[in-house]
Image 1 (tube, helix red, strand yellow):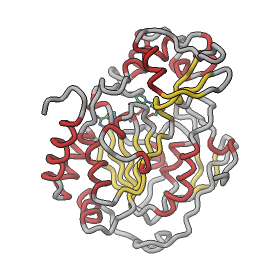
Image 2 (spheres, rainbow, N blue to C red; image 1 turned 45 degrees about the vertical axis):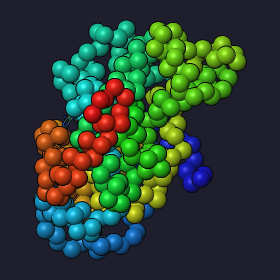
Image 3 (tube, protein in one colour; image 1 turned 60 degrees about the horizontal axis):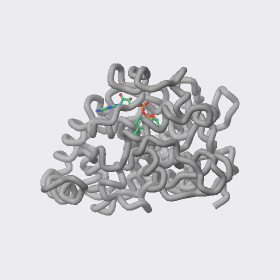
Image 4 (cartoon, rainbow, N blue to C red; image 1 turned 90 degrees about the vertical axis):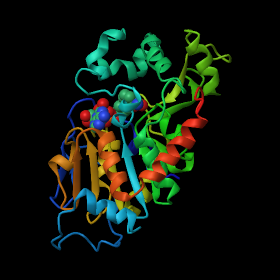
Length: 336
Ligand code: CNA
């Protein structure tokens, strides 16, 4: 699927508000100030919402979005998710003041926050990353209402794809099939030797990490790194699915992300300008703040409350309760 050259999907995991994207005020990209051209998104398909560019449209509310989903006017929902969907499961995000990783660096022996996801630092001292990894061991945390809402969207046949920046595996744990997921920043499902590139299943990596050993390659002795995308590394090939998914989407949900990491963040601009974008986050972020569109809906505040409100408006509360009960019973260490 060589639609884009490798450099187009290099991970530019920016940690500050350093990306300045120029848009034309109608939701279209013109370029970015840094000279790095964002991915050229196609916006040609005309869908149920017309061509979107010029006609005046009513402002949408959360209730309107719920109605579009409930009436199945939106059947190809694309989701962009970030660390904020997993904070209610107990996994800290990066940027939340007080609880986020940035505020708690003293736990890790790193000279600056980015170091934990830098290959050169990992080769010098893999322990800080490995201790972070150990905390994310599958089974330590459980999916929460947001993960199960996305699973329900899939069960209803309306989830086109879930793009996540998270590396905690909770989307998989909620029962969303791998075919519906793009784990844009990789996962712990496999590991690769940093020297000879030999790959291994994630279980081998976990055995070492849980035993507080640095994982080494049995072939050449190099350090093994799980297939998590570090700064400057290419994103997984599946990320290229955005080229077909985003132009086809009829609704974009953006959940629990600061939209500060590229190229992921720019996907928020990749849906057609007529397509509603619903942001549910604690604060206003990214292109929805600096390049808003007429069909944007913003629901600020705690994600669990927002999702519960949406589920209620959808009339899916009972379905959710059934799903959560069924699924939590399947998770390890749960007697239900
Ligand atoms: P981030 O930059 O930390 O932003 C998280 C966003 O979510 C912020 O805007 C928060 O205000 C918001 N948020 C947090 N909790 C809630 C809540 N309960 N309700 C509403 N909003 C909330 O994280 P991003 O995902 O945007 O940044 C991308 C990085 C974070 C990726 O490279 C990830 O690999 C990395 N990360 C992942 C995890 C994980 O896998 N769970 C944890 C920490 C960091």
